[in-house]
Image (cartoon, rainbow, N blue to C red; front, side, top):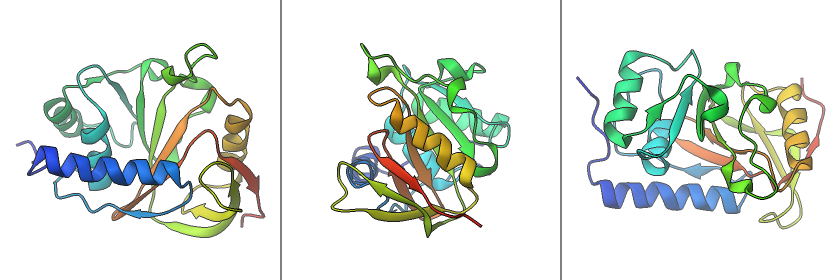
Length: 195
């Protein structure tokens, strides 16, 4: 049996889209995003809502091994029409748990002529916190203190390098059980001491 998607596709996907756009416009801001849908484990409801909102039949999706199952693949194909690819470099959306984030160099980063041809990394996390990094740039008044459970200094160093490539590079959406946050490539990252 395939888990149900949005009850009202137009209304629910519009609501999730607004939350994603607000999170992208205000990096580090944690947005409530309780989507009214079901998702097959281990896919979080918020991750499913992002995929159902942003992906369609023209969108290749790559799943990390921790999220890859027949049920998850069937669910995403049924509700989005998207192709599940086994080649990470082809994917426009990459869905991963926090403990299995791929090397940034392995994914599509776009080109200077076509920076929009980069991938979006959707990372499932257990929660958000403060104190890992300081964010600055577009959408941030002065600086924002931000952190994510389960992601350490090596991830943030890679994200700082990602910003240095701007305008190419990836955008990141973090999903937890109840909320989302985003880290566009335009955001500068200053690392703090991470325990």
